[in-house]
Image 1 (cartoon, rainbow over the protein chains, first blue to last red):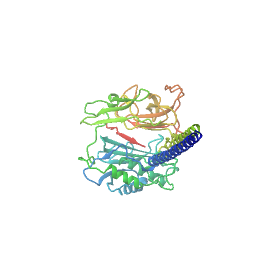
Image 2 (tube, rainbow over the protein chains, first blue to last red):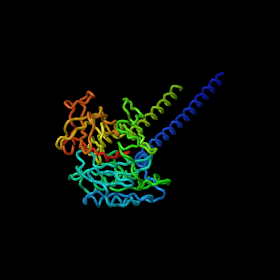
Image 3 (tube, each protein chain N blue to C red):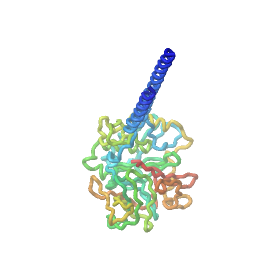
Image 4 (cartoon, each protein chain N blue to C red):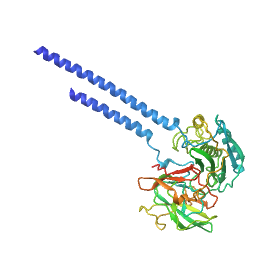
Length: 282
Length: 161
């Protein structure tokens, strides 16, 4: 009887220790998996994730496509436009070609099938550079780049480093690229598609990096049945087929948490629709 | 012994949750807007494209350090004049393609307008007597976008700073 009790107790101790060891081992493995997963996500989110801008791209029937850059910039900006054009043309899927500008840099209106690059004193509005694109579906039909000399003519920003950085990034947007990283104060990624307080780095953020070219290959990896390079412009606001002023008559298709419209769907004629999104960052 | 096993197990679970919060929280949280300068000179910024004549104004991008308003001023001898309309209170951070701002009158071809940023005194309602213009950190001038009204204007589908 005593022997039976001792055996039962010893078995129980052995059993409990074994189960405990297995549970502990499983937990350690789980912790490792969690850490690895989080590390992959965080690294990928910064440097290796897609930075396509909404899948927007120039429609074309063959690669490489040549995107024309209208030169509406003053002589102080010419060399930076040339540098950016050369840098983006390193891409295997597209080339950029500087051509005479067709717009007044003060309002920098878009011209169908090309990108107009402009500089002017656009005022104390808080931005150094801005890129705009007009789209039909996911196809870019025209674009503009504005470089704000209200700031870029000041001692703080009137430097080759800042000008290369801004020119490169804004043109990159018109090719369909978004930012690789939007944190201004972390380490530079070595690409102009990375927000930074210090574009000189190191590494320098004045030019595209390999991941930008890889992203362009991804974006332009397919061919389209049409081309938007050199196509007619979409009608502007107030110029739609049904005569509607879209600012007043765009249909609300989505409300935000405060009940405000966050998405409008607009029929702009010819079977095309323009969606305007309100994106809440906070 | 069962108590010991339970305690060990609980400790491991707590460690796992802690690790997940530690690594996840440190790496995945969005960067605060206070970090932003660079292409955005300041945390207060605005972009308005050339507009066609209308009773509304479309603001493409606006960015606030704190909640605030966009007010549309008419031109008075090259300076911002009478206020024609204002947005509802907008949150801190960046907002794209906000709801069109209704104006008290239709704009005219060739006209120049000003879209100016104002702070919110906390009541969530725009009042030009109580809410003050936000000043640009570089120039000390009100943050505003001067834009023109033209029948030939064309609205972009998307903008990116």
